[in-house]
Amino acid sequence: MKTEFSLAQLADPDIAEADKILRACVHCGFCTATCPTYVLLGDELDSPRGRIYLIKEMLEKDRPPTQEVVKHIDRCLSCLACMTTCPSGVNYMHLVDQARVRIERDYTRPPTERLLRAVLAFVLPRPGWFRAGMMMARFGRPFAALLPASGGASASPTLLRRIKAMLALAPNRLPKPGPSGGSVFPALGERRGRVALLQGCAQQVLAPRINQAAINVLTRHGIEVVLVRDEQCCGALTHHLGHDGDALARARANIKVWLEEAEQDGLDAILVTTSGCGTVIKDYGFMLREDREFAGPAARISALAKDITEYLAGIDLKPVGQHSDIVVAYHSACSLQHGQKITQAPKELLSKNGFVVKDVPESHLCCGSAGTYNILQPDIASRLRDRKVANIATVKPDMIAAGNIGCMVQIAGGTSVPVVHTIELLDWATGGPRPGLN
Image (cartoon, rainbow, N blue to C red; front, top):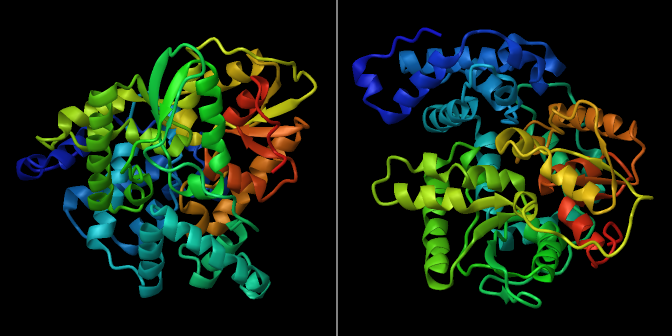
């Protein structure tokens, strides 16, 4: 793709990066076949290729984003299926992230939307506030039926429609909090390694059992686990809302405490059980590439970050029983298969440890969760969830496994089949409790 940035514009490292990405695009259109919003809506501007044209024009002309540009960028899930499909290696992720920052900086949204986004950006990364919000949501759920239902793929769903979506996602009850930062879980038997485990934000409130299952599996196989004190949200939630200042501040804070832990007692890896977080942490090196103080440390942290299944693939797990009567539909989270290119390890781990694993038709298509997407774009998200659940049903599973809490909550809203994390099944296979019963 031909670009026409001025030399003055190209002096900006972000514009220089955008120029490189845009020039890699050859207009082939392969991305349209795997883009969830294009598949649903059939609008060229709701495809990666269409969005690339909009972003190119906005950046080249250095104009404030128009309402049309914002509509189509907001509809993007950042599922990154286009990057898996693209034969030219276009890094759409870094381009759309830059567009979101520009929108947040230069576009004035309606007051109610600004308020909602500000609340999400404040509450979701803070587990204490998020827990309080979920408890309050329980009182609002009985009134959800009075709120407006789907109005189609609206460019900007109403505040009430979005509140209804939030109430639908809230659980009926919350589990007790898991262990706090600063906790160390010694290896059982001879110590073979030492890792940090990301505590997460929403996940530690909604499903602390996931990290507990990871701790069980790791310590059972000789790996010491530490929950690093003063760790913050990884920054993924605010990063995808275009709040780059907040996201980068959180990244720097985490890099500092993780490196202190690594230098003090050693770390073989920083393990992540929420693949959306893992994708962003692995990108810290790029996000902070222009920061003289943090560029090197950020790259080091990105190299240490691993998805829990990526790490366990290198360990000889010891199953204690067979579960060959359990059919597991494996849902491959977009952030894992497209963002981190991890496709086989979770399925192989489950299969080697006794489960019957079935692929889901249209596994490349997003379930509609995508961070805050199922709140901000509830109608498109609901259609994608229903499509995903229908595809899962065709393999007649006993359980559904996924590697991302957002996907788990989203899919569970449309099915009665238990939705569990991959690590919970591996915990069960190696001596832990059967998941899906709590």
